[in-house]
Length: 260
Image 1: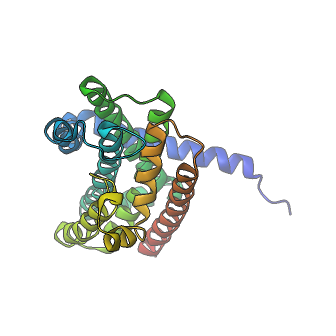
Image 2 (image 1 turned 135 degrees about the horizontal axis):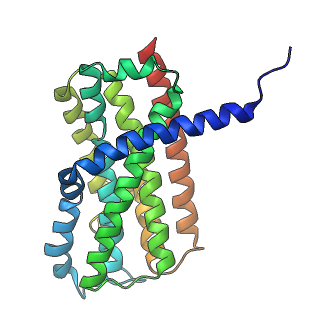
């Protein structure tokens, strides 16, 4: 008995993923407020906090804009992706998720289509943030900006996967929000999103090395100065890839368990 060819299955999976991506992308495009307010907090930091740092020696390899903007890009991904699970909780409560599960669509595609929509949305918002930063004085090579957007996409996929895994475990939004806040706030403070952790006391700098997000922040800042091939960028890429693989595995497992 011959086994089914993997090619048709791969095509079906890609088709299912594109279908789910298109469904949620259309929802997002109809919600302009979601797109606007998602990028509002980083824009406020850029407009009101950025000018305070102009001219300060925050880094030996870049100016203040090359330090602040990479942090704001990853801050956008951190908060935008981490709270993505709220929508899944609502779908659980209204039975939308159960109805989607009984369709022939691949279970993995149900999740991958969602996280790819999240990544596309946050990359689009990041482009807007970079354009405003360029108008305010940011000077960075195009290659560095593209590397930064790639890190935003990968971090979004990782954190959105974890957010959906948590949303599958909790029953109500009131249980979801405090857990996400308890994780995102220390991540923001210990990763050096606003200011480099090299400026912190030694014990705090050492503690921040336990935070995976720090390596991504350092990598994007290095890329914004043109140091694409530096060990910092490579280390950040490896951490991002490992975090993404682990997050998606946990999310897929949680989805399958919730359907059992």
